[in-house]
Image 1 (cartoon, rainbow, N blue to C red):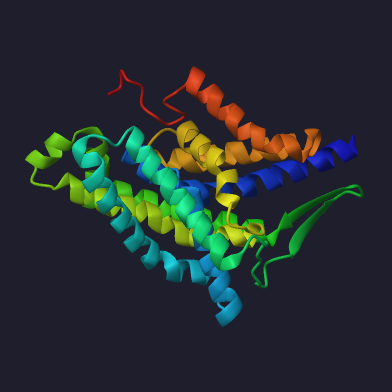
Image 2: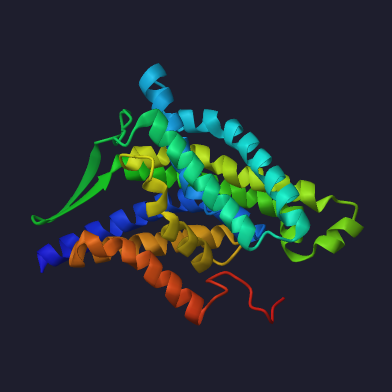
Length: 301
């Protein structure tokens, strides 16, 4: 019995911390897909690009990975600005964003991935920081030992701060309310004298900018290689859909739910079943509650 409790407590702690890490990966997609309805399937690969930038700054200049992620944020903001400009002019402006726009982001995904393979090869990369490899152990009795890895704890804290900051920005500022208005009624926004395309361009750039810190957290948590983004494609979309499209708080809660579910399944049924959890939850949500945990029903609109 003590062994079961030990495994369960460790799975719960790891799952909650893993959920924070997942939230950092999904928060940008929650903005671009959840609020702007732009299916940016290249977002996980942009996170890998952010991870490689953190690796470069850490290995060559000795900069802390999280600081490297913050420093690369302006680069990703400009990148997101340029990507949306191309996407709008070529696809969205002509109403061809549904299928051709999806192909555009598929192409972007592979271009970034191939570029990383050419530059860095296919070997796994790591960073060095004082909190990587260390853990805090909580001993309960004589047989229960709950380990809290610092790398996951750091990722959880940074992700929680970033999520709360983005939520406050989107709910308490005029621009944040304009972003939400774009998702609901662009015509009404035009009548108020606001350019909805400019709002979408800035919001999309903001979503892509999260790849800087998100990528830094990724390489803190696990070794990276260029194709790693495809592994997290199902996770991030499942989190955004489960949380409710456009709900930043829902994204954080959904990430914790999926992190705990994956951790428990991996602990008691084997790590091979872990990745299937996200897709299973995604299918269940689409079937029984497509609006997600914090999404509004059609009647509410």
